[in-house]
Amino acid sequence: MIIDHKYLETRWWGPRPEEAPTLVLLHEGLGCIALWRDFPDVLAEATGCGLFAFSRFGYGGSDPVSLPRPMTYMHDEAIEVLPRVLDAAYVRRAVLIGHSDGGSIAAIHAGVVHDPRVAGVVMIAAHFFVEDVNIAAIRAIRDTYATGDLRARLARYHRDVDVAFRGWNDAWLDPRFRDFDITEQVSRIEVPVLALQGTDDPYGTDGQLRVLKRVAMCPVETRPIAGARHAPHLEAQQATLDAVVPFVRNILMVPAA
Image (cartoon, rainbow, N blue to C red; front, side, top):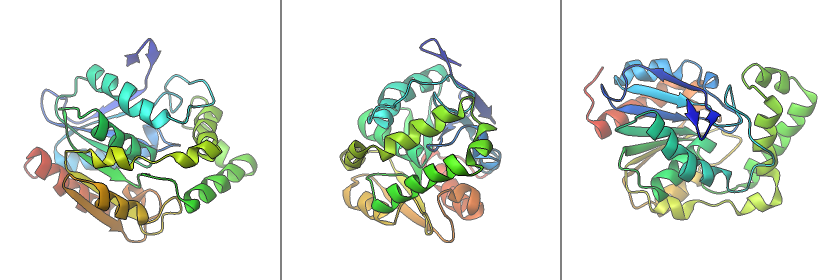
């Protein structure tokens, strides 16, 4: 897919937008299409919806970006890039499903753009504000990237692994990023929201879910996922599906698959 003369890696599962609603997957800060693993296949089969995923610029097989990323990179993705991607994919009616940074991007999009195509939002380990444990974990993974095998493992998935890693890691560790707080945007979401958080997530606490429930004016369901860390959709997939599938079916009025 070409967006503004740049190549964006994309993939579809299941029916296209003219045949069924679409679940749009928004990956984490070190993710890409491939790193969703088998979750799209399982979710498409369980819901009967089409699934659309893309690797954001700088990730996977998509074109790279210039570094450093701006402190507003998630707002830019949510407000400027995502609407163009949905247009190019001909998405008609959708639920956004975002993991980590992708969950934050989904929240900003829903709270600011108020896209009539978006009927609901699922946030998996999303960040609404910065926590000390969050920064400590991101600082630790920087050391792992520099001295361990993380760089080699990520290089299997990213066209330019240093752009993918540094674009995310350097932004979060910039002292200015401590001001990242999207609770105002979250408070303006009008569609139903489901938020999941692993109980052992090193990148965030249940304080994220508490803030969401406190500020949101829309229907909100929160679900701690026992034993999961930062990727409940991979580490506790059945518990994640047990929450996501009924939410999607109710929002989109999709019959059981």
